[in-house]
Image 1 (tube, rainbow, N blue to C red):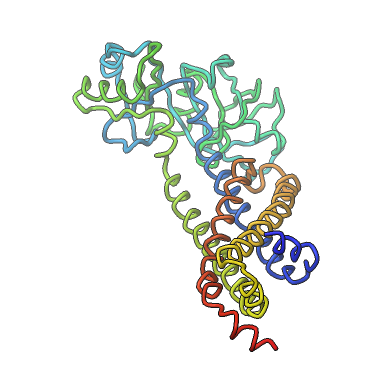
Image 2 (image 1 turned 180 degrees about the vertical axis):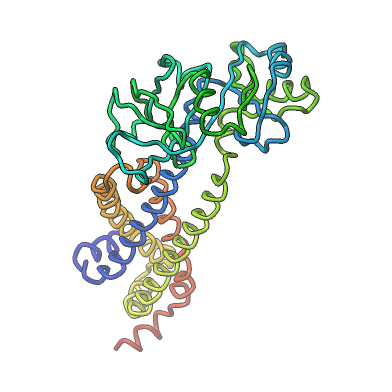
Length: 371
C-alpha cells in the first residue's frame, strides 16, 4: 500500500492521462445529474409547494389537472372520509403573459394556479386581481407591483409578491384565489370554464397522525372509484414527462459510469503489464497477490477521488456562471457525493479486470523477461 501511494506521489505524470479523462467523465456525470435535478425541480416545484398531504383528481383524468373535474357532491364525500381534516379546491391554467411595453410575441410561459390554500403554510392568498409570482420571473424582469396581461384576453393581474421553487412543467407559476382564476379562465378559455364551486382537483389536509397513503385509498373507496387520490409526493412524481426525463437521464448516467469502468480497466490493465517485472520481484521477496491488487485499487480510489474533487469545483463554478433561468441546472451536495460514489464503484470494478493478470504473474518468468 505504501509503495502504491509513493508511486502516485513521485510519478504523477504516469497517472495524468487517466486522471484527466476521469475528471472529464466526473464533470459530465455531475452536469447530467444536476441537469436532471434541475429539470425535475422545474417540473414539480409547484406540486411540492402545495400545503396539503393528498391530492385528489377525478378517476378519468390520469392525474392531470387539465382533464380533471371535481364536483361539489364529490367534494362533500371526500370531506366525510375518516382522517380528512380539510379540503380545498385547486385549478391550473397554462397560458402566456405579457409584461408592460413588451412586444406582441414577447410572452412569458405561465401556469396560473387558482387555489383556496396558499402555497406553503407561511403565506396568504392575494386579493382579487392580484397574484404571487415564482421567483424565477424576477430574472425575466418581473417586479413587485407590475401588471401582467394574461392570455389572448389580456386579463390584467398585479404581482404583489414572490414565492420560491414553484415552477410547473417548466413554466413559472402565478398563484391567486379561485375568483381571479375563474375570471382569467373565462376570458381566455371559455370552453374550459367550470361551474360554480367546481375545481380541477382537491387539496386534502389530514388529521394529525393519519397516514396519507391509507387516507388516499379510503377516499377512492368512499367515492366508488370516481377519484384518483395520491400523496403530494406521488403526484409530483407522476406529472407528465417526469418519469420519462428520469428514465432517459438515468440511462445516460449509466452509460457514463460504464465508460468510466472501461477507462479504469484499460488504464490499470496496461499499468499491470508494464509492472509485470516489478510484481515478479515483489512476489519473489514474499509479497502476496492480494497486497499487490490492493495497491492497484488504492491508486484507483485516490485518482478517482482527486478527479472528482476537481470536477466538483468545476461543476459548482459552472452552476454559478450560468445565468439563472437559462439552463435548469441544480448542483447539490447530494448529487456531487452520489457521482463520487458511482465513480468509486466504477474504479473498483475496473480494477477487478486486472486481478487475473496480477494473480498470474510468475516471479521467475517475470524477472527473467525483464532482465
